[in-house]
Amino acid sequence: MATKFSSSLRHLLRPSPFFASLRPTRRRPEWRFFTPVAGPSENSPRKEEVVVVGAGIAGLATALSLHRIGVRSVVLEQGDSLRTGGISLSLAKNGWRALDVIGVGDELRSQFLQIQGLVMRSEDGRELRSFSFEEEAPGQELRAVERRVLVETLASRLPPNTISFSSRLKSIERQGSEGTLLELDDGSRVLAKIVIACDGVHSPVAKWMGFSEPKYVGHCVFRGLGLYPDGRSFKPKVNYLYGRGMRAGFVPMSSTKVYWFICFNSPSPGPRTSDPYALKKEAFDLVRGWPQELLDVMQKTPEDFVHKTPLADRWLWPGFSPRSWANGVVVIGDAWHPMTPNLGQGACCALEDAVVLVSKLRGVIGGRSKLIDQALREYAQERWARVFPLTIRANLVGSLSQWENPVFCSFRNNILIPRLASLGPLTKHTNFECEPLEPAGSA
Ligand SMILES: Cc1cc2nc3c(=O)[nH]c(=O)nc-3n(C[C@H](O)[C@H](O)[C@H](O)COP(=O)(O)OP(=O)(O)OC[C@H]3O[C@@H](n4cnc5c(N)ncnc54)[C@H](O)[C@@H]3O)c2cc1C
Image (cartoon, rainbow, N blue to C red; front, side, top):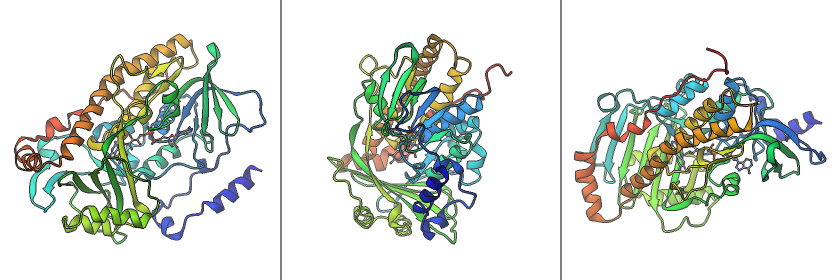
């Protein structure tokens, strides 16, 4: 039965030759085709010690961190396979530190270019400022990583049967000292001692805990991936272009792939467009007349590789925001602290969350609920102090970069960027240290 399901699904999901050429050549991992945790006919809930909700960056990093300390977990993912969209993420040295602790840093490093600095230009191509990491922020490590490769790499290191696909969480209910009851869309139920909610920006678990929906910040972003199958040598720098109420950028990921984005002001998120040709045209219309280098990268982008996303965040005001943990349930990653991507820190912080949370839980999983809640409280306190200021800062950097007023833009382009900006303080938030993850009781 299971084999039949797998093979028919494989047939349905078989990629077109074009997409197949973009996928890694290594064997397709087996975790893509697991069946849901339990059939709808089962009445009694399946019992689990640790359940992770969501197989995104935070969820997979958490499951892998748990695996490293010898703890088994089940990851419930609503999709029938890994969600591999999202184009690219810039990971700074804090993200790499977390990936090293999880044990996948070097595998990913070998596939993506190390960025050496930044070049900032105005929309007419005039250079405003150029920064070198070596000179102004030594020790920085920045790479633009394809999200698909990141999630597939994390998932490939998990033991078989860790991820349960087609397992969408429908409802959640506290069951006293027994744990938390999770009901899935297909009617199956899981009773978990610990629930780690990594279910993203519109997290149902965060909603259940009393968090409001993230707030739209007034700008949207187009993202795309330019493909150069024959290879091309790009300078390993992040290229930023500043206009009025709009900015764009591109960054080489490897010799064959370049990530680009356009961030533009819009009073509302606008209608959802699914027509990829219309999306690409809309993106081009925004940057008509901008430097050819950017337009060339956009031209090299297949329509399916263009996405539009409205940006939103949620500020975790002390005293007003709900607690992020209670009775063995905790929210992490975007589910807890969605932030705008202006500092490139959302995924980096999700990775940090995962390793810090698991280091706090090390030694208490399987023990008394009181100790587990104490670990969750310590985690939440430590991480709140980290993510709340970053969320605000990312929002402010976004507002400043999206200025429309010509006087403000002139001040930004002629004084702020060329004379006042300094890379050291601007990247200080990427400092992050954490202990290696080892099973409890080992040295
Ligand atoms: C335009 C843009 C650019 C960005 N650039 C960067 C960058 O350069 N650097 C950086 O560090 N960060 C960046 N980010 C942020 C980064 O993408 C997020 O912070 C990160 O993906 C959060 O990971 P997550 O695991 O918390 O959530 P997600 O990756 O969204 O994963 C959530 C998972 O939960 C699953 N799920 C949801 N609901 C349910 C349910 N009910 N039941 C079961 N499963 C469920 C989803 O299917 C999904 O797999 C960017 C974000 C945006 C929007």
